[in-house]
Length: 336
Ligand code: PEP
Ligand code: MN
Image (tube, rainbow, N blue to C red):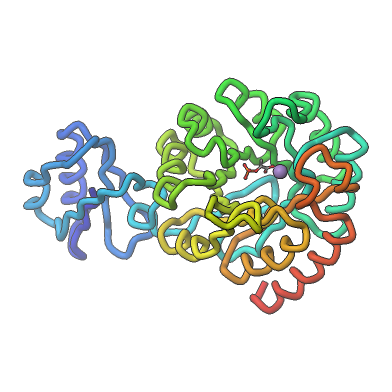
């Protein structure tokens, strides 16, 4: 529920409304940045009878919000959120960021070489999976804590902040010790215990859209993180399942401007997992930036043919260099 006060409402009237909400056993959250004073009501599990509030002095309108997400919506938070990862600012008005690195950390030489290359060509953040959510158990599952340590070495060597996936609530503490930005993969978008645990840490989270999740389900998943107190969330579109088999997934680019309309959170696009094909990564990365994405995430490997996961969609260093040149020109055009 959203309570909109009229222009003349003074502090006393606002206080009275907050009190009335609290007397109902609910939480009143003032909403900064809105044109008029607005108070968000949280904590209800269903319809709220607003009769005791509607007629209070200064109340102009009571809006019932029936969406499964509130904190992520613009109704409750009109100002843009800019997420800081190390010194890198991600969000509205900032130059779009590039996250690059291998699907999985495979060894020290591989991750440090990749980190140096992507840094040289202008990446802002280094990615690399240590805990890998693989479809089958007979494939490479990641180096786990050893992989996190190698990412820390790569960060020390290049200064690039690191992004890596966390798969379970019990490893959030461990991954947060190393990562600058914690990724929730598509397969875990609705791992609610994981989301709640990430809501309790003080580090930013990159939440990828589940491959069969509607936008509403995606935003409701983000809401779990915000509801526990962590507002540093970046949403990431990474392609969804459709009948089309020519690409690994179908990149749903329209959600980029839609997310920007509906929420205050930054949104990124991952053209690597969306397409599954190296040749499609650059065109879709550029399309994402034109659509308004606040960043792109691309997989890069020193020798994609030998990669232990996602080789066919990984860019070579040369391919990444070319993409970065194109992104720089595009950013100029976009005014960054
Ligand atoms: C990844 O980033 O390597 C990954 C597994 O992505 P997704 O969860 O989007 O499939
Ligand atoms: Mn991958």
